[in-house]
Image 1 (cartoon, helix red, strand yellow):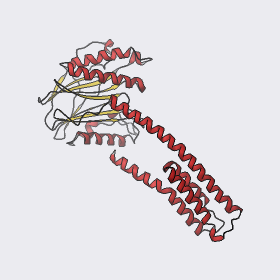
Image 2: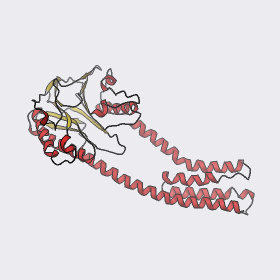
Image 3: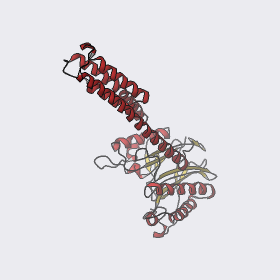
Image 4: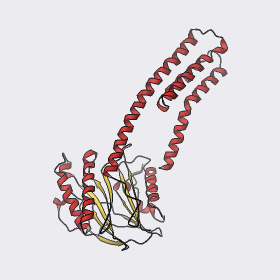
Length: 361
């Protein structure tokens, strides 16, 4: 993403130079062609291009320079301006005024968009706060990639909570989109943080989440009131035990990245339905223990990663793509995954993607 941002800055800098290039090009065109040829298209295009790219003063300056240039190219034929020359100068002046108006309209739209973006960012920080980079001796990194441009939060979720029982993690995916999904995310995360502190086992944490979603479901409308569900994977890292406990409720299995480059998928021994579907059957939740050696990284993710398709319909396979690679920094791992998925899909994500990586140093 940093490379993409750098490329975007270079493109923006080149675009801001375009009005000056047009004016210089217009002057050269007029000097190098017979009098019957006019460079007015260059001079009128310059302020129009500057309007969405430059601030107000830059647009005014571009219009003024274009007007002076349009007048100056006729001076070599004498101070007298014929009807055609006068019309051309007035055309440039009119376009310069229109460009100024256009600049103000664009800037007001940018301000409204910036305000909406700030609100979305504030909502994300409130609902999905970024955890500390280091918690109880573990290195932590999270990342949220929205499929919709300028969207900051959707139905995917993550949370990290230190507790007397160890560092507890959750990554999940709420069925549906829009504000209903965001409300369910807030419910799940709020219930998780409370349960993670109070409950002795992940099984009890899962039951608390189930009850919280059942209460929340009574307030949802439409199809979500009857078919709303949330897939989650819960993980617990006991302090100093060198293992991880995992409880999966219908979610893509976590990956364990070992220091030697091997990648292990950690699927549940027994499949379980997602949260919110308890009426379809009952089963005892069972957390499974797996060794979590020093230098290993645990990767939890939503299906926005594993179901990302390329133009041929091929899924992105994180286990295969990460095999043989070593990452000492979980943040670097998540940045690499996000960049690879963007390339795999051609920059067109169809689903949000939440990533959480924990490394035992």
